[in-house]
Length: 496
Image 1 (cartoon, rainbow, N blue to C red):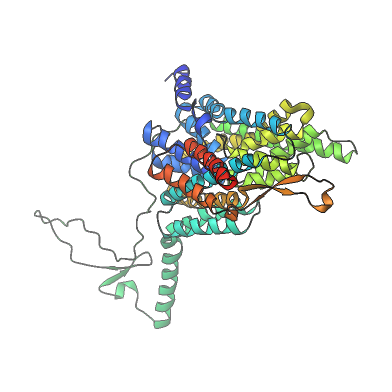
Image 2 (image 1 turned 120 degrees about the horizontal axis):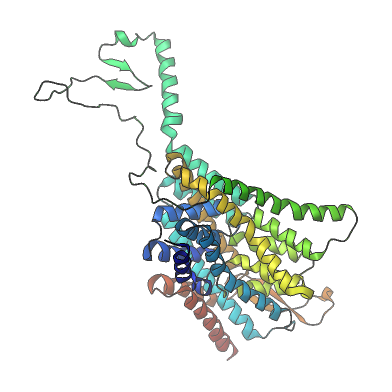
């Protein structure tokens, strides 16, 4: 296929995804799977799950890296970059416009608007819960992966720290590796050592003195009479005891289709570029700070976005609280504006990392376009560069039993983190207005957030979104709109 044909194919398959991919990263995985595995069959299910797990094992937006890498392995790098723009730009532009509007709205919002926002959030909780359920069914293939699904979700819900998410994912990969090869690495050497020690204590005869047995590789192999063929020659028969190591569960007889990835030289150049992207802005900011000079807010904001895009593992569920520390605590964005952008984010298509675009507009009000561009580049580029650089390594190792075992654990741990997204949005999904505190210096009100349990009706909206999408095949965008309409209807009921 020529480059022109590849570009046409990418536009044909991706042009609408930037407008209809509602519901956050968990739902995005389901949308991408239905299109590129079930419908157009660009890649097999195993490769899709591998790319998903690899994206979650790297920093940055997981669903965006998945959409990008699907296009790369099918049509090459330039096709992947085009797919990335088609996937992320519509939502990014929308979020930038949203931020411009939020910066100009009054402090007090009408109750009907708050009900609409809460309905959107409740519907998003239902969609992410559905995505978590479906991913867990696909990733939980045996006991060890089910355990890591539960552990990953439990730790993510109970404790929040940027370092914990990569730790969980790496631990999941290592645990399945040890579990799959426990016979070769643990059981057989242990039996061999214990058997040798026991024979030495008992004064057991050597292998030549034991008439019916021989000592093999730590195993007792029974010697039987060899059956013969009609010609009198021995027939090939293998008889080993039940403790022999089984074939690795990750091995597949059919090799997956070849992938289009960059060369090793280009991958090394990308890794060098990643290091430069990370070090040059941070070193410049540190130099200005040490010299006692004022750091331009544009540079300061860009550095914070690069750091966020580099240290965030687990994608969308983790980006929101970390970005809050980087812009609200710095005093660049008010808590109210941050909360409103977060609420409306659930009703916008595309990746949650587009949140950084809106924050750039709010953080640099005198140059809103520059702020949007800095937020977009700073948050997305680290993960995209790393994914592109590491795809050749995955392509070379994906058929190896060791790599298959590791990826299986990575996928289980990453899928468990989607339950974290459900819980985090549930805790802040209810948007309401409260009178300002006595020490606020204002007689007005402030916008706050709380758990959706503030009103049982929001559980109805969340469950309705779940069932509509799962049982009645409602597209995610329609379920989100339904949640917003449900919020408006409930406002009317409460008002009357």
